[in-house]
Length: 103
Image (tube, rainbow, N blue to C red; front, side, top):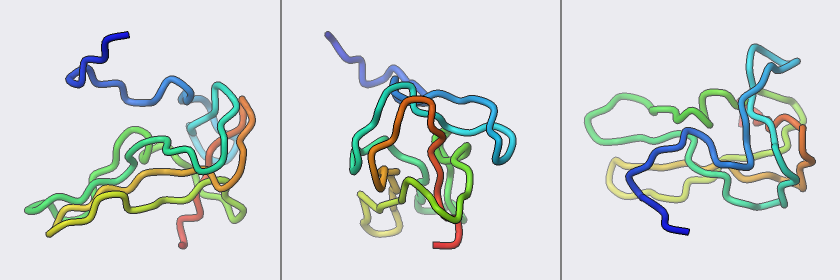
């Protein structure tokens, strides 16, 4: 398979946007996902931009007091940071991915 690095997909193939019982829409697993798998970027901080830009993945992750995912800063240099989402445990197909917004 040839991968075109300039072809943009808002979500990885193993995730989909769907109606959430928590709030509005959320991110759901299409397939079973193993714990600690890098699911991609959620928040990006760039020089000359106040705050963080959210990717589609970051924009639809809902809050839970018992989250199944966490954010981890994978790039950090100067005033540039990129956070990715990682499952805290195995996630079953059809399950919504969640974060604890308070952490």
